[in-house]
Length: 224
Image (cartoon, rainbow, N blue to C red; front, side, top):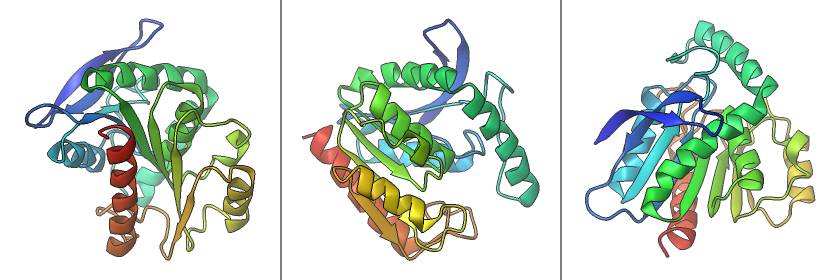
């Protein structure tokens, strides 16, 4: 179902990506933004899941400007490596947006395009919803959204956070909700990474509820 592809950004830079096509006519396109761990097995699996329900899903390798093919798992050493790469991404955030836009253009082959992202990808999702031409956005446990909260999303946007997430203070979540009341903020009795079934923090119930909300959003604004 899925395949590795090459994306070309607006400045000519070429990066890798993963593309999953549905059977038959797509209902829309979805850009899937990675965690700090690169386009790994989990992100490819998410793309495949979106394709299974009718969406063309594209995941850009947003670290390719710093290290081609970076992909790790979820060990403490992997987390440390991922944080270094995330810092590189944050230091060159305009380039990150260029690379997300490259993925959006490919996903737009299917019509309207949504975006979803996890961990650092949640932050990227928020910024992309504000700066690029997406029709819906669903961001999961994006710990760095607060510095961008004064930017206004151009599309319906929902946010998911875990009440037990020690890396994202609930006071930050409350500030986001207060500043952007038009963007629903959902809290779950779960930890950071609750949507990833390859992490110890995976919470099946929270993941299911968040997925239902995400699919409902995309079904309404992309396929509706």
